[in-house]
Length: 358
Image 1 (cartoon, rainbow, N blue to C red):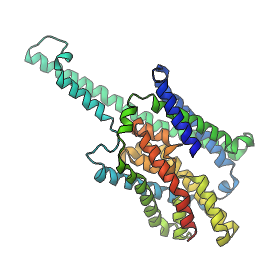
Image 2 (spheres, rainbow, N blue to C red):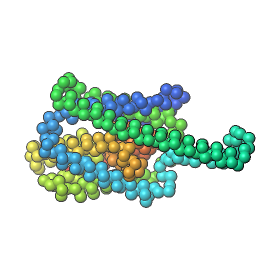
Image 3 (spheres, rainbow, N blue to C red):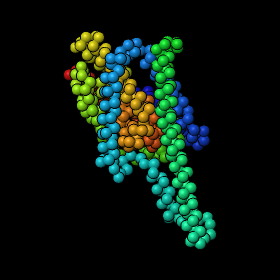
Image 4 (cartoon, rainbow, N blue to C red):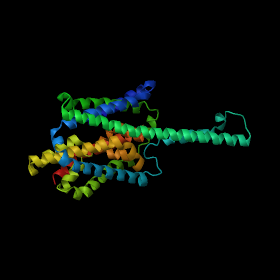
């Protein structure tokens, strides 16, 4: 965790120092390809894990139900915070502020924006109507194209993950590529790039000064929303105790730590086989939660608001899902996402241990 955060803030510092270089404005394209590469290696890890593959038919549905319930619960919590706590306030950065300031400047200095001599009223009205119509059509086309590109990117991302899974299952790639070491290096490179894209943003100062103490409610909402939703779906899942189900949900996307903790804590109580199965469910459920965020962040943002993708990302909102979150919600939300991820990440070992020990 600390290494990833160090690399991210190092990237921010580098981006700020090198912000005058125009090439840095195209970092988003490089970030997209790095995400694809990361998910390919991620798929290799999943496909090469025999325990996961052999139990997909019996454990996959349970893991999926927990992942979907936890993601949905956190989305609802984030939606509630957006609607009742942050409504009509500036507790987190708003990209529309720059636009309003620009229009305000135009109203204060109208002479600076007059480019043509006075015309007749009819001509002026006709020109205004044509300009508004053309601007509306162009804006509509751009928005439609932007939405298509965002959703297409989700399918491309899923494709890279699927190809990685197939390669891992078939063993057509060297085993050394499936041990997670390469994916970790790719993640490090990704976080430096994300940090640089934030640091070179001209709105960096505004992002920092716009953070509010009330944002502590966002990670709290993620934790409560996830646990309540997972508890609610437990009777439907069956065969898993409520406390064990909540231990799985308390991973918040931190699949490596939560699965290991659950397996180690439950083995003396349940035996090696059942503990391994519960650990596998934890691994799969938290992987699925991360994938849900990576694939559906634009749709989640559209339905539940700009805080929801951050909440869905859980502990991963500070690292692996941060690029998808900033792409869907805007780079001005990056510090909110990192802040949220750090606090949720910190809660994982305590909550998982607590529920697994019950």
